[in-house]
Amino acid sequence: MDASIHICKATPADAGIISRIVERSIRVGCALDHRNDPRTVATWTHNKTIEHVQPWLTDPRLYLNIALLQDKPIGAALAAISGKVAFCYVQPEWFRRGAGQALMQDLETWLIALGLPQARLNSTRTGEAFYHRLGYRACAETFTVAGLHAIPMHKALSPPS
Image (cartoon, rainbow, N blue to C red; front, side):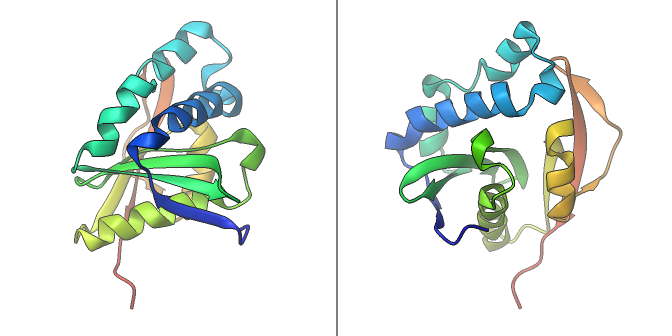
């Protein structure tokens, strides 16, 4: 992991950049999943606008973090108090450089602090190997939603010793 990656809780001022990071990561980094189909991309990104992101930042049931590299935003991730990880997106040029791992570790730390025994998520094909490397395992049959294959995965969480 790049030593200069810093993870912090996102603030309402971050809504615009988070929306742009998520949309770009989907459009560019997840082509394996959407196959550049404009309708699939539109369905996947329609609820990732600034107007959708802003309420997430003030909802006490959600934790939205942001990855910064020398104060430049390069990724964002979102989890809920239920233990569900909604997403982890990184700018494509920063894939495989530690930002996603750092974002997920921060989300998991938050979930552990809540006393949750596990984290759950639905991965895409693009993210499956990434989540597997972090200890997530498939836990149910793959299903299709909005033209995308979703792989239900979970990971046991344990407090630091």
